[in-house]
Image (cartoon, rainbow, N blue to C red):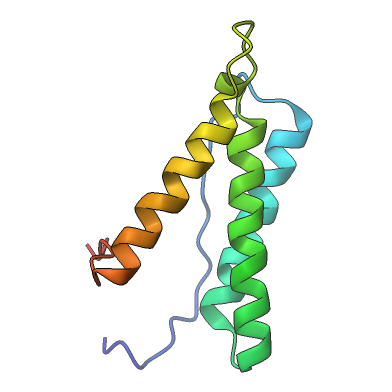
Length: 102
């Protein structure tokens, strides 16, 4: 099937939510919904706004991760997000975004 043809089926994902709270599970559902929306957006404003919202949601997930809640006083979530932004920025400017086609 060529890439220009749209697939008319649904994708069911199964995620082990053991150890997650209700807020984390809701965040996963919202991220998946927004990801599908970004991939199918047809309007420029919608595409850019949705892409921004998707990245905001993913950043929120990093902040809500169990690992970020520690007793050390170290702001791991903030450091992780700064690392992600730096890495993403480098890859965008080097045209080195990783392709996950399989």
